[in-house]
Length: 167
Image 1: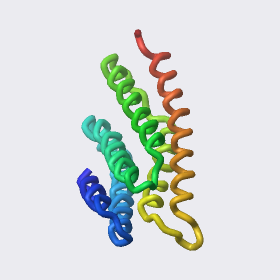
Image 2 (image 1 turned 90 degrees about the horizontal axis):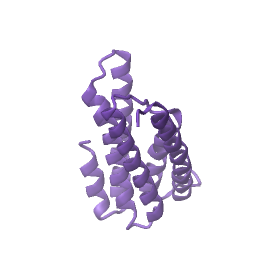
Image 3 (image 1 turned 120 degrees about the vertical axis):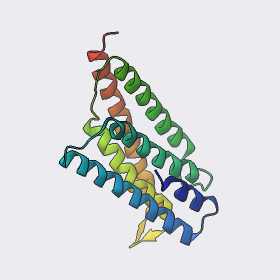
C-alpha cells in the first residue's frame, strides 16, 4: 500500500521518466503482494487482517493507477467505472457473507482478472512501443479482457453467496 501514493504522484505530471518509474513501482507493489500471499500460505501464517487487507490493497493499487490514467487519455473512463463498480459490489457481498459467517474464497476467474490487470496497467503506464508492441493497445485489450473476467467472477461469486446464504 505504501507504493500507491508514489504511483499517483508520478502520474500527476507524467513524462517518459515518470511513466517508467510509475510502472516500476506498480510492478514492485504487485510482485510484493504476490510474494507476500505465497509466503503466507506456504508457511501457514495467514492472518484475518492479511486476508482482509490483501484484496483491499490490490483494489487501491489498481484503482489509483486507473483513475490517474483517465485524464491522460490512456484508459476509457467507462471501463474504470465498471471495474470500480464491480469491486464495490463484491466488497458488499463479502461484507454480507462475513455477517453470515460465510467464507467465499476468491475464484479462479477473479484471480485471472487481477493477473490481467497487473499486466495491463504497467503497459498503459509505460505508454510506448516496446519491441514493436504498442503497449497502449496491449494494455487496453488486457484491461477489457479483465472486465469480461470481472463480470464472470462477479456472477460466480454472487451465485455462491446466494446459494450458501441464509437470506
